[in-house]
Length: 150
Image (cartoon, rainbow, N blue to C red):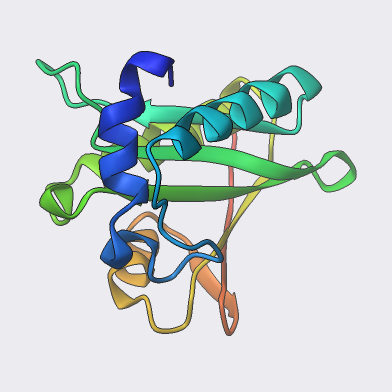
């Protein structure tokens, strides 16, 4: 994600429907995106979070974000998070992005487990993560063990 993505990111993060199941309020000021991008950069430098923009092939406009955070080195585990603009819901882009993120987590980072904290009312996200092989382990938590490809 770069400052050039600010307008598209604001459209995502300012939408109450997109932010409904997060712990954050929708952004009400475009300047909030620059603060978010600074935070993303700081967490990246510290090794505490990896965040990517989701950009469809043939486009240069982000339609969502996905990332890894809350790393637990002793368990080789991280939490996955994602958001996409409403117009991209059901398009398969998020599913493809999380598939790539899962491969990266396993093959590049050497993680063996991913966890997705999904609000109990967010049926759309629950269905997507279930199709990706995640299983419910608690009321709002879904996990997936990552197996090394031979």
